[in-house]
Image (cartoon, rainbow, N blue to C red; front, side, top):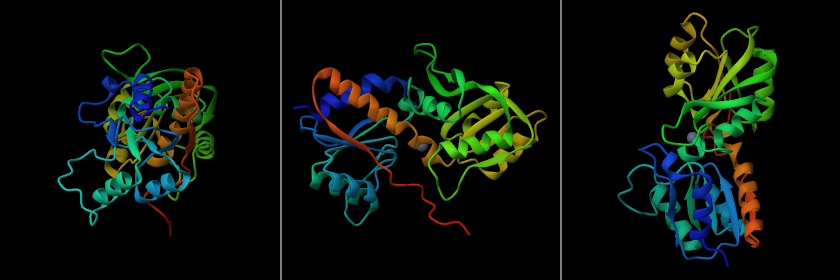
Length: 272
Ligand SMILES: [Zn+2]
């Protein structure tokens, strides 16, 4: 029998909590560490629909990227969204483990997955983690094996990430030739200056707002921007986390069923 606590330990080896940002809340947030796990569901978000999928597939552990309880929860009521999800999880005996900014920074994590989807090689962190092994940290910088126009590169990225209502957007000159690219999964406003200072030709991130993007592009020689919907960029990590689980379980001589959720938890459902 493999327990929730054992699996949490495996995932914490792969995505060390010390790599998480200080404001983050990572690790096991719901459930009994001593409970048995027979099936794991990987998902970006833990929503009502994710819990329904876990129940339907018989999963007893959800491994998510976004923490369910990142902000303070002062009541667990079934007439409120988070309380409803927590109650459904506890009633169904489903635990939740999250690897968030620690999975962004770790090897084979979110940043590496996004860099691979963008076709980048020779990777290094955009913002190295101060007390971690070399190569770890937030985001990645890499090279394109063959230079591409921004237009061709953005099309390639769009074809490599799951489809969403928002789609992939390009800011800057479509004809610019790109050789170096920085990537950061999720919302990348906070790293715009770091991306520009790194001297790359392109910055791939998500959730960019009008003014920060406009101000960034107004700098002479600024990198072009490729905006990938937050959910789509981070979903790319899930199959890698699943592969890690299966490798580790097989090395430990145990069988654990697992699947990656294909539910699009991007909030936007239509575009007009
Ligand atoms: Zn995110």
